[in-house]
Length: 380
Ligand code: SF4
Image (cartoon, rainbow, N blue to C red; front, side, top):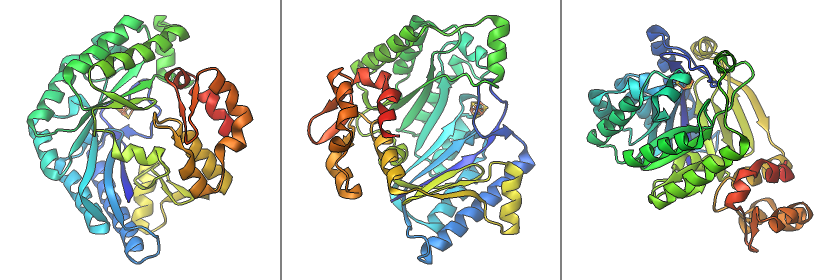
């Protein structure tokens, strides 16, 4: 079953740390963009139905951005319907929409639910107003709490929150205050990301000007481990390096990225993977709209991965999961005995307590997750 990803690249303001493919909201451009998305989805469906593409069934739809909650619910409904017309979308498909707290209200949330969205992912980032201001976010903690409550009232029973860790001036207790506030808000799923300050991000200048610093590395490790312990005590289960969920509320769409799954990406800059073919659409919003209008392919990159690259990818992403890599499945699919091939390089990590090898599985321990990149370099 495929995942279908639709990229919505519009934002009300550009956050000082953002490195995503996005632009400032423009109502006219948004309408043209939605029409282009509908056309791209229909074309992909035609190729699938004609048997040219080797896919047709889908069980997840994911609106990512940018800020997908800036779409009108009627536009969301049209995009979901286009997906259902173009593909055999499962009746119980997971349909996620990323939302920013300041861009929703009770009426809009109810309309999104009616449009078919059944999972919301809120970009909360922090429950501390000073931290949100440093990130130039448009919402405050009160608005984030209210948005979550409004989403529950609108009938959403599958809600995720994003929190960002290692923010400027954030100390361990500040971070844990946000984690506790998130637990009190009661989402079904929570993603925690480490802030990366990119070299050309305006945040870098803001930090230099205001003399904001990030906590030392060892504090970041404490933040990660302590947050995980509190989340587990509150009934969440870690299933991926950065993600926890209540039982049965893991992100079905994101799991496709980590379990050798297949997905199609629609919209500017969207990526897709079908079998060994990885593709990416043109990044520019206007270029994307123009290409669709002129019937020119929107893909700017199409790359066939060789067997070694695919295997490396499967091992790299598989280690992100707490369930780790199922060695038999990999042997069946890629004909490689991973333990035999990498035993010499992996054994020091096993001996150091960073990696577990129980014969059938290879998985990072919690301590190993802090040093995941070092372990993963064995495979790439
Ligand atoms: S809302 Fe998200 S995508 Fe938009 S600018 Fe901020 S971080 Fe980037």
